Length: 111
Length: 113
Image (cartoon, rainbow over all chains, first blue to last red; front, top):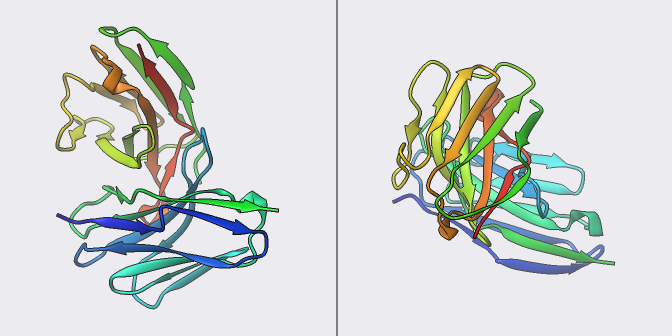
């Protein structure tokens, strides 16, 4: 069975302290890997889609990278407003629209 | 990306009753999805809803418990039937956009007593 594992489960950062979140997956022939941000009481907000190993995407302080078995979400010089749960999801090649989500990493950035 | 709204935003229900959740999109979309997010957990796909056809349910979810309607390209409903406390969750709808990216609604928080 395809699996998506995110680590760490929780991360507490000081403002400005850069770090990385990990998403490892076992699906073969990845169709796409998606990163979302979820604030408490809200639906997930789309951040990035990655399709092939070596691909990178950036948005403000966030940068997502992809290898054949994992993806990293790098947070550079985070601010308190970056506090959220970050979710990773994968889509297998024969499952159009079916996203399998990891458990998420809860990030807290303190001033 | 599409603008998605859900009604109600939250509800408290008695066990044995049913609740219908509405999902409205501001543009026409082919595929809509319903997810469940149980307390402290991640999202699990319940079913895929295409306009003009029966919804496709994932393993562990059945139509009698979670009937879905998709009357047009901008609207869908999910009913949670004969509710029990185990159905307390956040229910989310999503739509497929460009390059198969899914965009999510704000969610419906359901508490079953």
